[in-house]
Image (cartoon, rainbow, N blue to C red; front, side, top):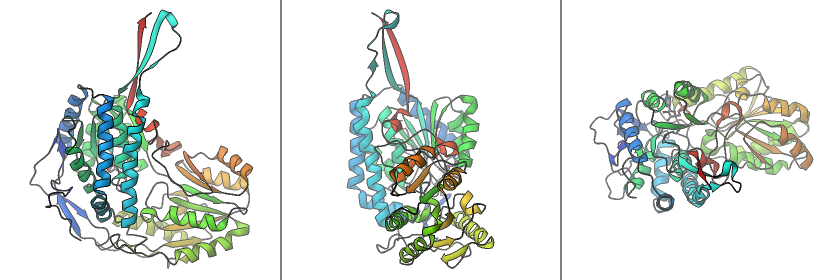
Amino acid sequence: MPIDINSDDSLLRSCSAYINGAFITSTDKNLSVLDPATGETLLELPTFGAGEATAAVQAASDALERPVPATERHRWLEAIASAHTKFREQLAEIITLENGKPIAEARGEVDYAAAFYREAAFRISELEPRTLTRTPQSHIWTTHLRPAGVAALITPWNFPLAMLAKKVSGALAAGAPIVVKPAELTPLSAIALFHILDTLGLPKGTANLVFGDAPAIGRVFCEHPAVRVISFTGSTAVGKLLSAQAAPYVKRMALELGGNAPFIVFEDADLENAADQLMKNKFRCAGQTCVCTNRVYIQSSVADRFVELLTRRMQDIKVGPGMDPKTQLGPLIGKAGFSKVHELVSDALNHGAEAVLGRGAPPPPGDGPMFYPPTLLDNVTPDMRCVKEEIFGPVIPLVRFESEEEVVIAANATEYGLAAYLFSADKQRCDRVLSRLRFGHVAVNSGAGPTPEAPFGGMKQSGIGREGGIEGILEFTEQQTVATPL
Ligand code: ADP
């Protein structure tokens, strides 16, 4: 389906970088944005690098010199949320076309994104200065929350609009000017957001957008002295690289990296509920989210029954292009991701796993559609790659376990610590297991992912810092304590 970029209300009227309050004119067209459902080009875009990134940081740095009152920031956030509602259908189509996810999921993503702006607006009043009730050293002590500086925001392709919302809402609420770099696979949602921002009367330089040469842009973010916070969501490898590049400049890093979410089902759990929750959790964005279940631990006594329940549900999943309203599972984002899923499934099958559903490992396609069938693997063992690495595809590996002690150790046996899911009817057991799980987000008898109202983030190598709630705003603030004599 072609994208209409010429209508007056198109959010893609100018498909370019946005620096110092204007879209950049450029005749270069070096970046092809592909539709993963067809492999065809949706749009050709210009690309940008270190020069534009430096100009964007400079514009943001100039904006920082003119602090904006909280009332005005509150107005921006409410206006952005309202614009998400007004342009809901257009934003959802853009997400589906560039990312591939089913249109109903994309609409949910627009609503989820809007909720981050509303939440940040609601929380702004919590940024008021706080004065100590005591007066040590005969002084009054007041702590102000100042914007930390220019915030560089790097986002991935799996939630092209919502990942922006998590970061942009927190930074703007804190009063920190932003430079955004979206994933080159899905830059259109970010461009659409900047068309919205462009209408809101933000002071020039408050919000800037660049994309193209990711390593060159990333280096500017790490080395430019005006950038004080780098908020990154993406792979652990790139997160480590950015941390290393920024280390000599002592910057705050807010990192949301990979996950390897265990989904633990004890024999006393409501198995029907566990199967339903797994369906909702696992296949979102074709299994390509960092909180998607990566490995399922099922207690041996109920494993055969659980396989039956999953098979019944999975065989009905409708795979197809996201724009078809009947589609429940869209394509993977691209060839590299497809090949990785193929490798992990092949590895499991070669080492003795059984493909209950999914016909084994389909070979990677050429440049065409990226559809991967829903796959259920039984008799998976802890040494297989699909247990140790992030799959990022519609594959459920089932590992059978005997005891509580065994499964807690297995769940924690990863360098990641983002999300985990726990199913048991025994409250005391849940509390016991919860207290030992080293994961930043745990849902009990539910497959729920994060929500804008609560802090979300990882333990261990899944990251540093939190998004959502007041914590997601505090990431972009710096405390300034002021002492005045009594
Ligand atoms: P994935 O493998 O899921 O695509 P990446 O970590 O490669 O995850 O990408 C997440 C984001 O990081 C994207 O916006 C991408 O362009 C960006 N990115 C990739 N490499 C670098 C880099 N060297 N410096 C800065 N950003 C990068």
